[in-house]
Length: 351
Ligand code: NDP
Ligand code: ZN
Image 1 (tube, helix red, strand yellow):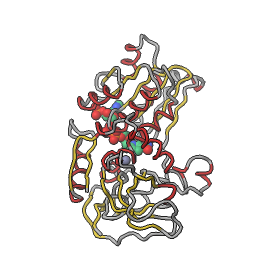
Image 2 (cartoon, helix red, strand yellow; image 1 turned 90 degrees about the horizontal axis):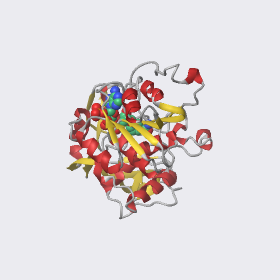
Image 3 (tube, helix red, strand yellow; image 1 turned 45 degrees about the vertical axis):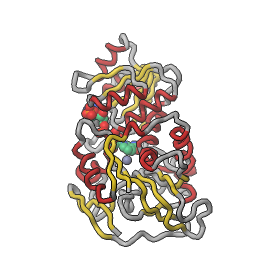
Image 4 (cartoon, protein in one colour; image 1 turned 90 degrees about the vertical axis):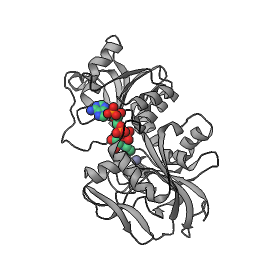
């Protein structure tokens, strides 16, 4: 079969591979729609997870079941399915502790285009089908299902990590697709004010439609100073970080109220240490909690987040700015993600 792969750090291209084999608990999926991610760009062009050779890329997609293992109960050939970017081993000790995303080791629940071939193939493999697939209802289109693989669950995980509550004033740093879903999740959780950091016009428009109330630019001076000015020196209750660098924690801590929480889902691709300002962190005693996490995967979460889309409470179509038809356009879509033109949020390839 054909697949679009990382050939080595800095290089991607089409390769031929064997169709993946199906274990007794697994499924083989033929994609219906695929979407590249900023993480694919970090993986190939920044070598963020180290070198990989001829590894098929991609972790955002949905499809039709082509084959199931002998022990799979709830799915059969021909079923339309969604799948999350993170596909844990549910019997692992880490999953028993509530962190399936780290099953088998730190971040090891992230298997697609990390420890095995990803979804940008004519077929892809899903482990533990009953636990990691969800049926794709007619009320969710394949392109919407792609947003449920990673953008929705990751952005919403930032909101969960920050523990946003009714009436909170929340700072969302980064309003790419992940940050936009953090804005939508923050609004659903009942925040009163949502201050966003990001400069692209298109992203600001979509953020406003999801409930953003104020915008600041990280190029217009320190983020914390701008936030303190907007909040009359009060600061914010919660921060969600979905963009920036190892230095972004510094302004976040500075403008966070004592007892506040930072939820970070940003992928820190470079730097050795994260900067936390000692004084504004209360010399370690301000109860300003910093939580960073990989989104949890799994069928139950997919079904729940999917129900927000099918019930009309969450419109993910606004994230999709570029559409392609045909598997061969996966390359173009990924290169678009790398170049990030100003009007891009997410490209989707429908097969
Ligand atoms: P984008 O690159 O589309 O968006 C990044 C956002 O951050 C933009 O709004 C950008 O603003 C802003 N930004 C860039 N530099 C800075 C800075 N120095 N300070 C403050 N803001 C800045 O990324 P995505 O939305 O696609 O993804 C966001 C992050 O989430 C990525 O690092 C991605 O790898 C990660 N991720 C994490 C996952 C997880 O499970 N934890 C899963 C998926 C993705 P502007 O456009 O104006 O420059
Ligand atoms: Zn992704």
